[in-house]
Image (cartoon, rainbow, N blue to C red; front, side, top):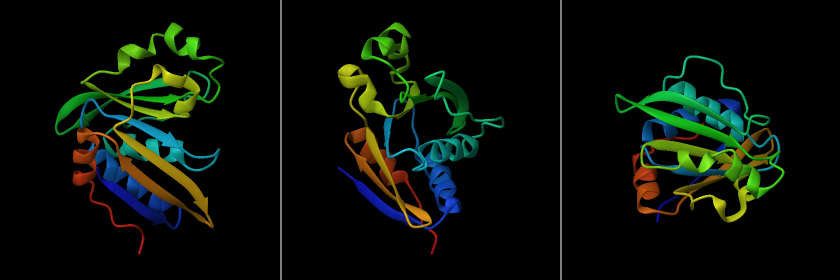
Length: 161
């Protein structure tokens, strides 16, 4: 499977990676975002959604747990659902909210704090690890499926040089 690492020297690097990732997405992907509070998970997702054509505000779904957006991928409307499970009290809360229906071949699911859902989530196609590094971030993307590998093959990103 494919693997990608980069150093993002500042917030502009995180925004550029989000934009590059938006151009590589395909319907049906499940992406897990890992990192401490303030590591840039929501900033990366916000940049991805704006680059994919979402014109409005992108809020963190910290309290709602999930926010759906419709964007254009390869000229087709695709729903991207941004989950933030940090405040989820139990795995059952995930089931009770009906979130499993979003995980299908038509929707892109981006999940912050996936460990909060235990074994209820499908395995990720891509794991994204963000860590604070000085003024910037270190990022690692790991493809864990064929679809994830294809996505990373399409990823064209040159970190801030």
